[in-house]
Image 1 (cartoon, rainbow, N blue to C red):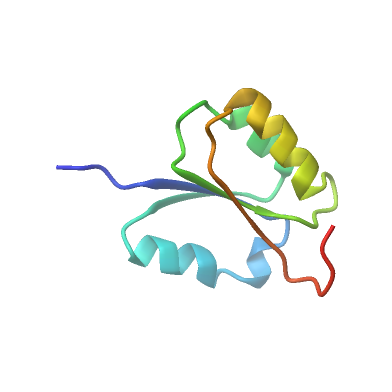
Image 2 (cartoon, one colour):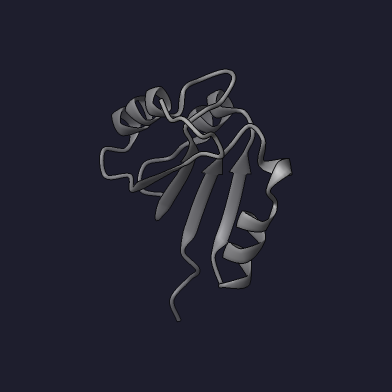
Length: 89
């Protein structure tokens, strides 16, 4: 039996949109959420997550800068960016 795919969401305002986590979990994914991008980076393990979903506009760290750091830790990481902003960095 195959284990659930693991997804990491990094979004400093995830409380404003809890439906993303809920929908993913209802579809069989195991979802971890970090509101603090620096904490997410500290806890990232190479090849642990099947997909990372990163907000592009966060207060502590820009999502694209976080992506650069993630790629240093896990160069095979698959990343999807999201934003609620009308403009993107």
